[in-house]
Image 1 (cartoon, helix red, strand yellow):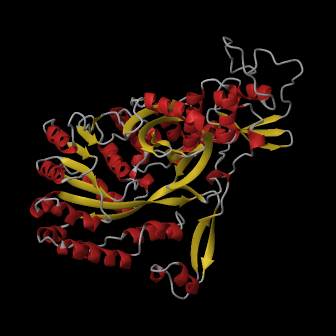
Image 2 (image 1 turned 180 degrees about the vertical axis):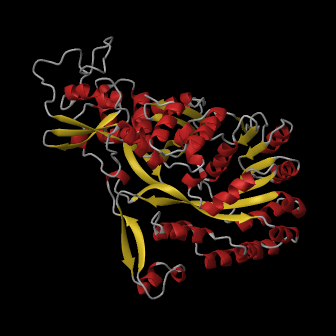
Length: 595
């Protein structure tokens, strides 16, 4: 049963996690914004997800069980038939002699323990069509079969978050290729069922992209998880055309077009959640390659703290995001999380008294209360034309998906100058390079100096799995060989303590689970404004910002390495030490002036 905001508030008040005046304030804000109370608590830093789950465990008078830290073995999970586990949202997590520990997020379900006893250790039952199941009785009918006795041992209930329980349902799943073969042998609706299996696996593994890569004899299916590609399974090629046609139909694309690139979108619903899916199809030598970008709904709940911003950076960003006008830019390569950062700021400002509009290509996350416009080349709705129209729509805040050309840049700067707060992304290697790039697009330096508030450069690093993380020491002499260019950031005469993941079932034996942001935040101060007006190089701008306390991307990442959030190898993969950055910046400036 989903707790209402008032019920959750009463629990937190009862457990002394909130003071009465704090509760009234956050309840009022949640009601005003029509969002869950927990989102307000997370945004304001009054509570973490861990504290919230512990508070609920205390309320239900059950021990808290961390499923990712202590995952069940498949044979333990399968003590409960999958249908029973999914219908009750429970998971068998441990067995000791005749005691089975079952995790639940809602122990108030009527006769929960009795229902579990009737189903533990029983075979999966497919109920005849038309018969209605009762969760209070055995899932194979109103009476257990005579030759099968209910479980006679002890059921021990523990509390676990619902998302952890649902993620644990993956222990029921066989390898993807094995399931493909079973579906093919069944000769039923192969295409939709195969797609459902792929989507469900991708959501379970937290994949950001699904790749269908046709080859001469078969089709390779690969997932991108935490920025790294993994093969998920292979499919006989004779069934691929039907799958591609199914994808085209779902994404409203032409099924008779096989020699041109097509883009579309799908909204996929399942028991595990809802995803917005961006679809791209291009013809290659061996067929049509399909790539699907998965935009899970959980991203809508992320806050700036969840994204990895330090307290000082978060304070600067929030201050800039509450100004009545100006421009905030995020920079970085594709897939660096630029749009997610901007959406974090939008969610913070999303209130009934604020008019927010976006123009994007494509619209990534649809958020209630925000007006989204999709760029459409077919109807000549470009970024520039859409932005020009948006300015006449009386917006308070505008998000432009990307500044790609001189016209969009000019309109964006003028919009920020005429009383609008404008967010956008720009492809640049670091925060300082963004300024010369905009000037080269034709934006007048004095206008840019008047409108720019903050530029955020960012990357995404794989996060060390918290369940198998361990520390190790590196001798200073070894560090100079292992971490070329970064050795000066470590003590010269004492062992260096670093962290990495050993590999476990929770992280798929990779040692990494999830990602954390690495940031470089350039606040446009009066001194930076003077440099912009003088058309200073990116090196001069970065040097001035550095003198004012800015940390380079690498330095922010190094703090996360020392805190055990990521590895030094991962940091060196995505960000160069400042000395290298400076050399590249000088080279870019020289090339720019020469051209």
